[in-house]
Image (tube, rainbow, N blue to C red):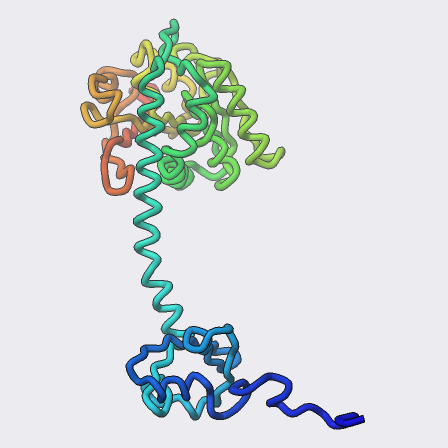
Length: 325
């Protein structure tokens, strides 16, 4: 039979223009100089894709010697190399990031508007609790994720090695779980709302290994269910403005802090946060309390905006040595 035992030529196996030194893309560029082909080079195999010119998506293999010093072919055909493709993609990243931020902002506004149509909270003897724990859990995951991430890093830097941390007003446990999982801290979370504590425990089961999970308890800040001098660090985020008796709450925090411990409170700045414009300044609740004010720092969140503030407090005079001791 004809052709038996004769290997097929490269031309027969791959077709004209593939594997040949004269590429079909080069021929077409010569035939029509007005066209501006977009040809991509794969650095690994030193290939040039001519599919954008003659269709079919086939690859033409060219030796490196065919590429001039400017990265084009010898006849002037422009070649888009792997480096230029990566540079183009990296140039698109800021644009994609801007779109992601914009869409995230739109989602946050929509969720805030939905949240505003519902009752914001319920008054209880210990303070205000959210009327919809599940809804607040979902809302805070989207809106407050970056906030809790930055706060957790700050708390981890301030906590002493092996120290015990109490999160007052922990809500669905996003900060407590992050402190335990990401930073290895031993954390106890407390909230006035049993529904929030249940959400916190569920979130911990899904995000924190069993051996590192925080302990979550129901309790009120004005009567903390802990023994004296139990914690090295007490934190509270976006909670103090909900406390029914902030002065008594700070006295309780002072009681459960160990000597040398301190409290870090993040709360909203007055008049800048939607839905909370009429809330009093948290600093007014600190004045005259059992805790001593150390510093107040605007907290950059979200982005470069400072809607919140970081308040650092130290135990009062009880840590001072008695006179004549």
